[in-house]
Image 1 (cartoon, rainbow, N blue to C red):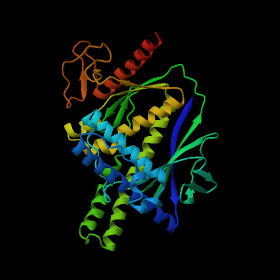
Image 2 (spheres, rainbow, N blue to C red; image 1 turned 90 degrees about the horizontal axis):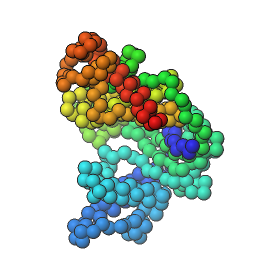
Image 3 (cartoon, rainbow, N blue to C red; image 1 turned 30 degrees about the vertical axis):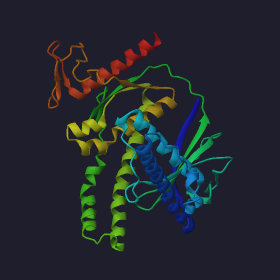
Length: 368
């Protein structure tokens, strides 16, 4: 089985390398915006799509020649993908111009004939050479580097995400253990064994500290040295929350993937849920979507299964004992009471048991 993964590592560039990164971030953003602007103008005049390339702009804007040419090509591919997606399906939204202050500072470059490779404590990158890297883990043996994405955080730290490909023999597991996971706003999840996720609510725990740092920032003169220093302090608080969340999600998903052969979750629209029920802060804090993605690839790499229940599956309204369905189940009802078999059970546990049964039946149907 061919597996494509990415590992992210911290970079420690010197001053000259930092200058190159900053310039390349800006050039990638510039070419994206310039090409988008020309596409818009061309379409207004001719009602046709303009197929422009970065090479066409290098004569007029000579500073582009200093960039990694592959990073400019990847910006072009990103723009074309976004542009075509909009015309194919307007719900994707029209491509937006990249802001210097709001957009992420990053660029992607490809490995061509060994132009990206790791040598002990350094990684070689196109156009810039060897940059110091801190690697907490090694790439799998026999892996081939496909590309690298260099990025800079708001706290002025540099990272590289290395995407690589390798072969791994994955033998599909004969399912023996099943688990249903029902998303729960307060507990992260409740599984079919009655175990709760107990998400630590990292954002809410850091709210007071974050508010203090943001108040300090609001009192300072925008653009001053103190203002820029305080911005980094605010960014570090956000960064710590994100790192804590990722660590928790990785450890929890790994524990579940090691313990069960089949896991079933619901097909949830988290964005709609946060807007409809005004739970935006809680939904964005726990990172359920990220957790499901982590769980999926960890199960698949072990030859196991992640089953996603159809969005119309009545996991909450259906009795897990007699399968009787309620017409309506209010969000305020935390206990499921069946009018048919008189079962009384926690609402989330009932849904998790239904999801577990859904997974068992789904695999049986696929076998047939």
